[in-house]
Structures are given as structure tokens and as C-alpha cells.
Image 1: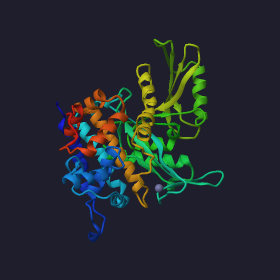
Image 2: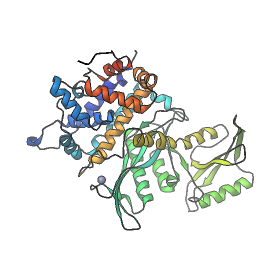
Image 3: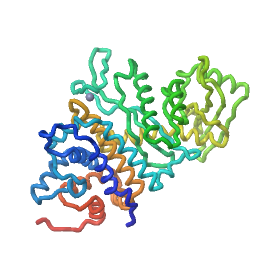
Image 4: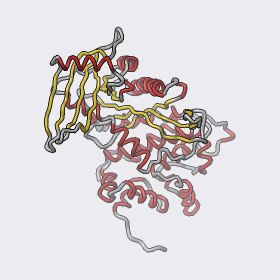
Length: 435
Ligand SMILES: [Zn+2]
């Protein structure tokens, strides 16, 4: 089967190894039992197969036949014990792992896969969305967010802001490096998320200086200071704008619509639903002096029996007309892809992002989150580009759960010389008698 070599599992794993090998070992010489690479790669392997017992099984294989899949598939020379791996990962600075996300994106670009994600005017749509990946009343670390309930109960939690390149017509999402939301960012939940958002914008621009970008986000972000940050970073935007957050804007818009200004587009689909688009260019974002003008659009779906089943509104820097309004709405609505196809998958479909793999005293919780996201990213790339992976995943198994069960079982007990070797085996396993 034809494989694009630079995007095969082995090539992606090698990119990961190269990145891990570049991280300075922060440990004192006398105390080093296992190479940093091996600890990070073992953590990645656990996430890749979504198997918390992976290290123990590979150690058993190693003891029994003097080799293991961790060596042949993941290039781990020495299998660390679970607790040792956690101790080491706890000390890894998370920023050292982040460049992996751009390494993979650059590979997709070179393989001409990224171009398929161009949305409007060869620009890429990047929704950003916040999510909580850990919560506890007991376990905590110095980077935990701390909130107190009305009854005085303390809760420790971790939140990230996750950007990803998406296309409304594509199933796979391409995550960029996330940004931690920190207590130092402000006193309110909004401050915290907006400040993390500003850092995130700077980080994306630094990692991808030439990428043409449209940022989409919820109503929290359609504020002047955030739009200033986007302009500085030369990024376009499609940001949700809700009436409760934008009273002045909606006054303007509603009055202008009543005067017959702006444009509209309506059609009825084959199911009898009415799709209504309305827009107006050049309206003030809010009532303060020197505020930017923005372009406003809204969209609603009305069912056959006249019930509004969906309604939303956005502001953008694109000049809106009847030729682009449908696409702009698709862009604004693509934010759900992060919620649905990234976070939902990570939380509920086997990745157990909220599961406590170990919290650590420093960075462990976030390092595991990053390794989990990197594993998710590799699955997304293989799903997008690798014929053998697609065949095994979709022709052989109907559910993700069944597929991962099979991967885990096979990986635990049979030695392979690489991941492709393993996929070929699963595709057509030889029948054997138990010894
Ligand atoms: Zn913590």
C-alpha cells in the first residue's frame, strides 16, 4: 500500500524523538536512571494506545523475550518504571514539548495536506475554545486554578485554551499548542481566559509567521482589546457577538435594519427549513470613543412549523456580501468542532483527558495533557493521510472503542518491528494454536 513516507507513523515518531532529544536534561548527572527521551516517549506511547498499563506489559515482554514493542515501535532503549517516568515528566518544562505541534503542521504543509484546509482566500480557520481537563477537591499542584464555591468549598482545576485548524467539511482537526489558563491572569474567569487568549495569539504568530489566519471564538473575545491583539498579529476574525454583551452594537444594527440598510439572503432547504442570513457592514463595536468599526452578520434556522431552531450573530473584519455570507456563517459555526471533535473526543472517547494519570508536584498534569494531545494529533494525521491506517480503522472496525481494544491487546502480547507491521497484522491476522 502506498504511504506518504514523511507522514507515516515512523516518520512522525522520529520527529517526536528528535524534539524530545533536543530538550536539555535538567537532572543532576548522578541521578539519571533513564534518558529523558525514553520517559517522554513512554508517556506518549501510553497516550497513543490509551493504555495506563502499557509500561508494565512491555516490561513483561522484555523480561520474557528480551525485546519489547516500546523499543521496536517507539525507539525507547530502556523501559522506565511507571513511578520513575512520572517523577521525570513532572520536571519537564511544558514549553519544551510545544514545538512538536508546529513540527507536525510543517510536515502536513510540505506533504500538501494543509492546503486542503484553506477556507476563504487561502486563509486558515482557527477556532479557540477553553476547556477544563482536571478538577479535584484534594489533589493539587502550584499551577492549579483555585475556586471557592458559595459554601466555601475549595476546588482545584486546570483549564486550557485550545486552538486548532479546522475546515467545516473535514472531520480531522489539527491542534496547535494550547495555552494554560492561569490564576495570575486576572481576578475574573473572563480576564483569565482573555489574557490566555492574547498569549495564545502571540504564540501562534511566532510559531507560524506567514500563515494566513482567521481566528474564531465566542462572545468573550469580540472585545476591542482582543481585536487590537489580532490586528497586531495580522489575523482576521469571525467572533460571536451576543446581544447581552453588545448592547450598543445591537442598537445600531437593529435600527439600521429597520431603515432597510444592510443585506439579506434567504433560502429553504429540502427539509423545509428556512435559512435566513442578514448582514450590515461598518458598525461600531461598542459605544466608546475611537472604537473600531466592524462588520456584523447574523443567521437563523426556522423549522417548517416556524420555530427558531438555531440563531447566532458574529462580527468580522471581512466585508460581507451575498457571495461570502454563507461561508462566513460556516466559519463562525466551526467553533463547535473544537468542542465536539477535539474536547469531546479527548474526554469521552478513550483518551480520558480528565482521568488522573498522575498530577505531580510541578508540571505532570499538563505534560500528560500535552502528550495526550500529541497522540490525538498523530491519530488525526494518520486518519487524514495514511491509507493503511484508514483501512484498519474504518473497514475492520466500526467503533473507535473496538479499534483501540484490538490495538492494545495486540501490542501487549506480540512483538512487531514497527507500527505499520502491527497494522498489517491486525488487518489480516494469521490463525494460530495456543502453545
Ligand atoms: Zn494542578
